[in-house]
Length: 372
Image (tube, rainbow, N blue to C red):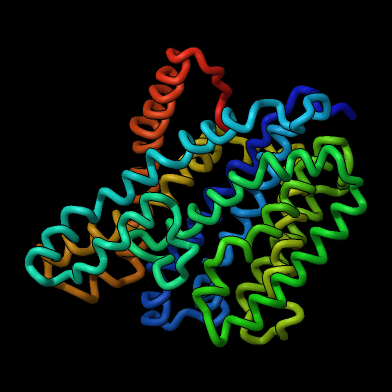
């Protein structure tokens, strides 16, 4: 199958991004609330390990970018130039990224003046603006903790043109073998250094690069007509069940079963199955509402921490009731507010800003491609 064929829309994958972003939200804000209501331990563990959803995001990023941009004709292995690709990625992530940094800025500046916020926090801002915080593990969660993954994604984007050429020139079996070996090695490395340097194991960008590469290989092979699943619905539910079971019973599983390598393979199977769904369930995942929520999921992911913290502070200032602010009912209410805000920001801020940036570059005479 030619690589320059028309690409189909993969709306089911877009919808899955919303559920992964929701898992990250509840990981950040629902853990204490679930403990207070004495939720079953597996449910508590599911959300305690919700940050593992970033593995899904990293793998999906490699899959979608490879599927969208791979080309078997052009020498660089991409449908566009590297500059066009990087500009598409910049306009996709950076406007909302800056918005999320701007939200806590007034409070932090005022706190630094009044002495309630350490001035050292202001020194971290340049690293975060430049998407470099993940390279300094002690600063990875500065300002907006979820933003560390965008620092990692920036490395993926820088690597992608090189990876696209490798996909074009190297044999598939060699790519599979090499990627899986490196992924297994880095998963072992993560588990080995986590007790001594948890931030390094969790945030350092190069540790996550093999997951992105695996997604690239899957995306390229799927585009070529390989990796086809005859019973996609079965594999979708099988992979979903295994991922949920891994997270819910992680404390009872040996390291050989619960590690980034196994999770990446399960997420890969889930992505491949979701991309090939048909029938009623595919229609559900491809519905306009879920696709819209999926398209707004990046805003939900990058904005939920500063926005929710601001909302909690505001409610506490007027009501002064800590149990209410941390209750599970209030957290669910805040999630619903976050979802609505993310859709509004996506439609009224993110998309218009991207269009403006594209029109500005078009006026310079440089070529423009649609951002993936």
